[in-house]
Length: 220
Image (cartoon, rainbow, N blue to C red; front, side, top):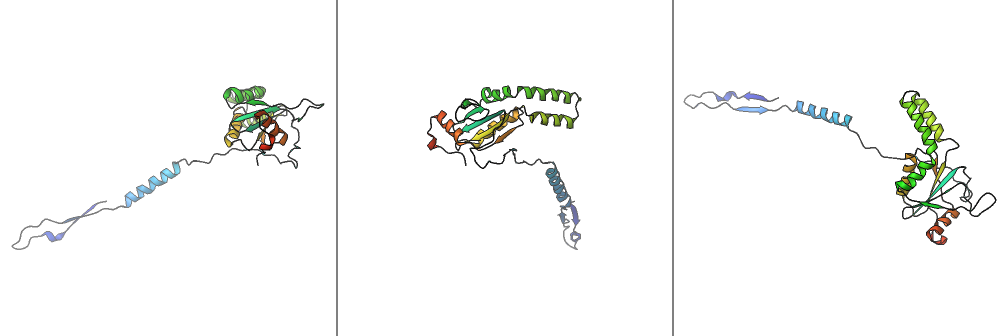
């Protein structure tokens, strides 16, 4: 607080003029410092700090022989390459026709909503309908929260649902991978993994692109 001190030296002197009293000010900064610390504490406690964004991925243990991966029942494999191109095939990979089926052929998709998104939407329609029915029961309080979450997890992990494998060559970008994973999450896919691309798959992609297999190598 400001204080006004009066100087007693302003009295009359005999035979002299009357002099004005000298005044001095002293400002107490303690309340201002207290206020500054209170404001600083308030902003620290109420501020929202940016958090690093991360995405959980599942990486299975790699087999001893990359070309000897175990078959996955009801699986769909995405093959990502350069120039934002993506191919897929269903079921077990076959380098050539045999008694179990025809030679694997790959089909191209795009990252447009009318392509990859619609493809996943059609493949997972049954699962999404069941999860939507569970959500309606949860919203109407017919299911408790823990039961609802458990049933959703069980439905996503059901053996009848598709398992998606994401594979890339050395030309694919991180953005391509994230775009595919985003679409899988949007379509509530519960089973997907990232694995290394096999040489036969890479040769098939290169054949589709018109590239000699010797000019390309799997992603490291």
